[in-house]
Image (tube, rainbow over the protein chains, first blue to last red):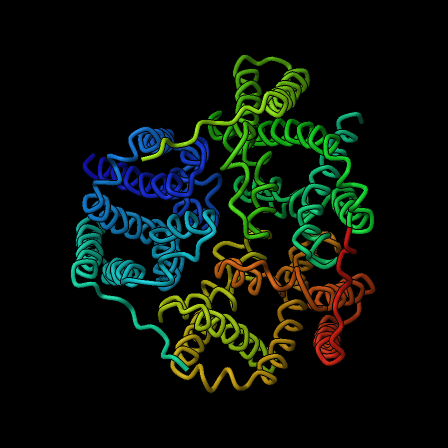
Amino acid sequence: MLLTVLELVGIAVFAASGALAAVRARLDVFGVVVLGMTTALGGGIIRDVLLGIHPPTALRTWPYLLVSAATGLLVFVFHPQVAKLRRAVLLADAVGLGLFTTGGTTTALAAGVPVYTACLIGMTTGIGGGALRDLLLREIPTVLRQEIYAVAALTGAIVVAIGHRLSLPAGPTAVVAAALICGLRLLALWRRWDAPRPRER
Amino acid sequence: MLLTVLELVGIAVFAASGALAAVRARLDVFGVVVLGMTTALGGGIIRDVLLGIHPPTALRTWPYLLVSAATGLLVFVFHPQVAKLRRAVLLADAVGLGLFTTGGTTTALAAGVPVYTACLIGMTTGIGGGALRDLLLREIPTVLRQEIYAVAALTGAIVVAIGHRLSLPAGPTAVVAAALICGLRLLALWRRWDAPRPRER
Amino acid sequence: MLLTVLELVGIAVFAASGALAAVRARLDVFGVVVLGMTTALGGGIIRDVLLGIHPPTALRTWPYLLVSAATGLLVFVFHPQVAKLRRAVLLADAVGLGLFTTGGTTTALAAGVPVYTACLIGMTTGIGGGALRDLLLREIPTVLRQEIYAVAALTGAIVVAIGHRLSLPAGPTAVVAAALICGLRLLALWRRWDAPRPRER
């Protein structure tokens, strides 16, 4: 029950991030809602396409569709207010990254793929929606350019995979991994950690 | 028989739209043909990947491949003449949108997915090719930015789904839905209907 | 054995091409590694998604992941030196194109799809990684704009398909086809062959 609520919170936050980016790019109301839904559901859809889960869970779970579409509409109407909540959005985005990544890794392990495959697919679940958002808005995905984001996701995915190999209970392991991802991400934001850039020639 | 002809007309028109955009972007002859094929077949390929139909129907139906490739080549050679047919291309594009969307929705319902999933996948079948065309040409997909296009597709998909729930005969329902999509789209073009944009801050 | 070595060489070269492009776009170390892996493995992942092979071979074969990630890291550190090896990179890229395309066509034929479908999927295997690299870096895919690249791949794929229809031994046919693709590509580079562009209006 708590997990479902948290998952819907993650979806709402990712949808808000996509919808806000769409408002900034001056899309129309349909574009804002679609960007919100793509950002919220895109990572899970990529995961399911890679694992052969047809049709993707995100497209046949109506609460996911409803929450992401409604969030997009709310952001369309109230975007000046939402944009002011910058810190709250970043915090919630870190929570979403943790939940999506650990959920994706767990789903992939349950499908019986090798552990390193599950880690990659879990990380992709966490960062895929944001990458699609940037691609649709004709931007190089932020996740490839700056800040510790994907590395936090990958770290948490590895924790889930180790727990799986050691046969630790899945629930608590996932909670610890999600908290780790969220914590790493917030620490990186707070300390302005960037991944190294290539040296100049 | 009539349906097959109409479907090939839809493919030819979508291919022409992609090929014309490629000519404007100064791609070479291979790029023009590929853009034409992607625009014509991309929506159906996305649909089949989401539904788990392998390999996608569009890649194993040679008339689809032949018609879309030949249209791309013709546009490459005769593009100044084709570009003059702007109104005819817009009209045919509306017909293609209607046919692709209703066909996609019907295929998804036949695969046994929930009705709302079928509506989303049907709409994606109709708008996916054009969105891929814009992405490959490094543009924010038109469908997200302006004009009533996706909303017309979604409306028709919902009509198909309602007909399916009421067990109405599939053929006539699809014809009505396709005509509705086409009509809404042309009305939007004629009256210059745009979807609402976000208000300025 | 030799084939496996050649395949890993192809993966390393494609990874180097993606990583170099990422260095030029000023991505961070994570972005450079991801771009390298996407360029090296993207064509095969698209192939497997289209054929319904879950999860894609590239994601569950650890030597592929290791070689592509390590190449990305090496390019991140030594990019000024690697960029000087321009001719060697182009040569190796032609070898990779040949290997990926013939491998993709053979895999598709083994999955039982029609021959023309196998040719298209084989060509996509060869050119898909580079197209994804360009898309992620917000560029119109090079393969659509200039030079004989995809046409060389398609020619080799057709040779593989003809050999399959004539029941020729698969191994030697693949070698001949790969050599043909590689030779055509190098000839096009050497003679500066471009595909025709659209005439001006």
